[in-house]
Image 1: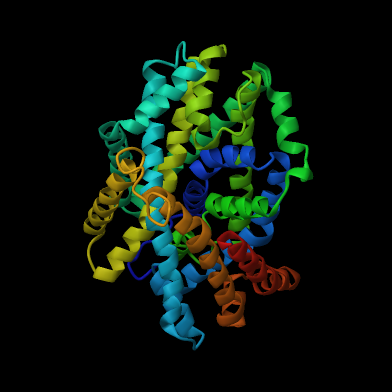
Image 2: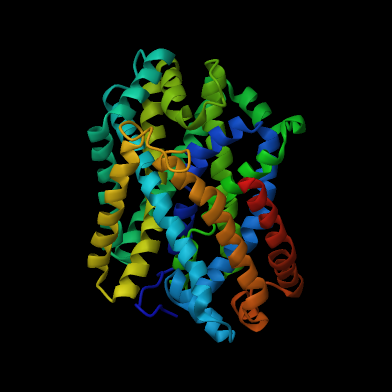
Length: 448
């Protein structure tokens, strides 16, 4: 079954690579290690995995299901499924929340990917030779002060992403992910194996997998669910968009299990790539957002084979960032294409251009506009609060309510045919009675 625009995945492998590419990104490799570091390490990891499987998985299944059932961008898909269930088409606004989340996240995300590309260039040209903790911090600060430099690398990342989107679902997205995702997995696995022999691996294993629940607080649960949503791509419209290209011959349940296992494995492998280098060199595992930019270059400078390791690491991170940007941008592009009835190449240019404008403001918020406050925080801080505390959890809550209480039982059962009676009953129980209350508590605690 193809969408109204005729786009569809050519195979299950292509869909899985695209979906894993969207889910697996800087959220796993850049964000997961420092969020885990700031929230107690292994205790956070256990809570995170629980959030992924008991909250993230049911919503992810619901998103793919609504996308395929509704055959359109998130706004149109929600409206179509609501109409089929004899409910108000105003549910389309839930799809609009996902669309807005994708747009907002892409603005900040593009800047971070720009940092990664810049550091990949640094790794290629210098290998971080003779970098110290002081010079690494100074280099990172100098990058944040260099607006033109950040803008160049950010626009480069957007141009690569835009070119993939411009080329279409099969000729663009599929071709890219068929090469980039296996490459990323091989690089990540190779780097983790390297760390077994490079030192610090045992300490990283203990830190990641020995729980210390004395460090757990309400903030830990909020951080875990936020990371889970950010990591697997829930409530960003991307999975609903990719679901709209999904043939009925492909099982949603089996696909979600594969996506989540791959996504979680990458997050844990990322920890085994990053933390051994951190511990082996006596660095701080709770290094914040600058962990891989300020901490790892020091480790690269000190370890045997540091040049090769640094090049492969930032290449892997670049691949992860671009594939996630593709999913976010395709969400926006697919909506623009259908909303305005324009060809893909025009909608791609329009989407990239508008995001690029806001990226300028985002990049200036690291220096010139750093002290210009919106509600006590700068532009980037406001956008991060918007998607972390409102758009993602509220969007996830409303998707769960829609799939569990609004969408006809017959329709959801028809989409989840690979589930037996017990499996379907479990999914329906979670999406109706576990996910909404859990997200409501998280939303309230996050806003108070």
